Length: 239
Figure 1 (tube, rainbow, N blue to C red):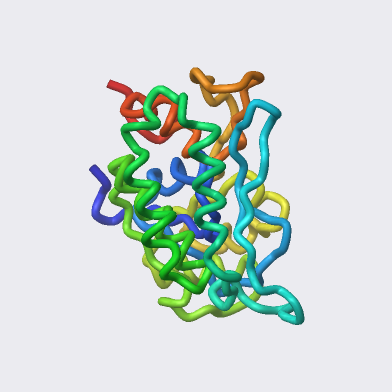
Figure 2: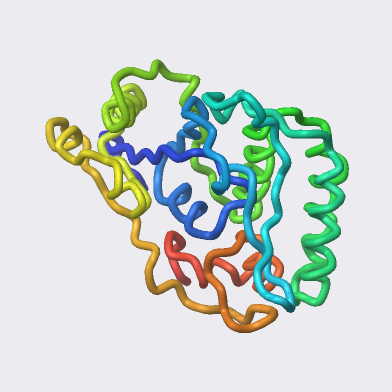
């Protein structure tokens, strides 16, 4: 149980069908803030992720409007049409149909791709749809909010600190990539503890198409491991 005067927060940009580490950080905090006010970056995880195939990993890319939109934020980024939904689902179905638990989850994700995702125009909304659904499957009950729910002040690390303050956070969780840009002194000057997630030494599971690959969408873990998947994540208490 979380102490009443303690509150853990993480702030990350939304990703498309993220990998397992993304959900471990969500499950490790009390509030997860989707950082949708920052600039959209091309060739990144915002609109794409990887799945496994007999020929190796491939990218599933959501086409988005980028021409002439050099400074658009993630929340302003629109998808191009809806044909990608059927294409992505066909790729997933073709490569995971023989996974042990694919049939158990097929209906859920088929419905998202072919009925729900087609209704959205903005990338952030589509990413949130998948994140919310997968959180439900993992029984993750962390509060999800948006950076646009708060007032953004300062520059880079200062923005993160100010978001934490507004969310009444006492501890900020960051992925290890944050070490490349977070200026720790801004956190040291507050009462907010900076904690780095450790994504090393994840256990391997029975995965289709060797060799084993950790950096793929969490759908890979869901379809291959089903209800036993929490054994291969870090934020769940093992029974």
